[in-house]
Image (cartoon, rainbow, N blue to C red; front, side):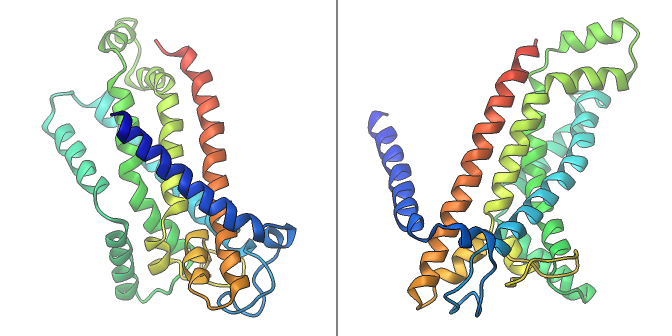
Length: 267
């Protein structure tokens, strides 16, 4: 067990060292405040502002949309349905299967739909397909936390004459840390995924001003620019990887702090 732990920790620090040592050379104000100039593949000037903004648009929009869809699902199977219901078991099994589907499959599915409907790559298409990708993560994470809520608590609330909606609000208070954890996991998966945006959101050197325009993301900025023969562009790719890592680490730390505070109210 110690050996396995040492190997995993060594891999983590090796990855971080590689990203930081190569990415820090390209980090400057221009890198985060300007879009690429002369083309993202061979253009030496400019930065990755388009990819930073695009990633926030795609991941933020998908996380918000999936949250609005997931909370009613979790409340329905945990409050309104009996725990032994076949529908509950079927729902959980379905989301477990969807949880394991590779993102490239979601991307191909989204691309097929776009071809059928005659749509072009756009920010909206990227948000919708990434939403499909992270809904199973969000639902199953919140559902597992809801299952930990004592059954006696629900019975006690019902015995006081509360309605199902009032009971749902009590349970929501208990699963609040789980909701934040689900948001963390979902946003991290959304902002780090490359397959879905590649097929559906496209790529551009510009910042989108509407949902119908294509958008760049940090994973695709790393993918495209790292294959460039121009050294300055490769350095920009490592800087994009460093920024992506910093965003994910920052979100992890902030959510864990909030999660710890909210856990004080759990029964």
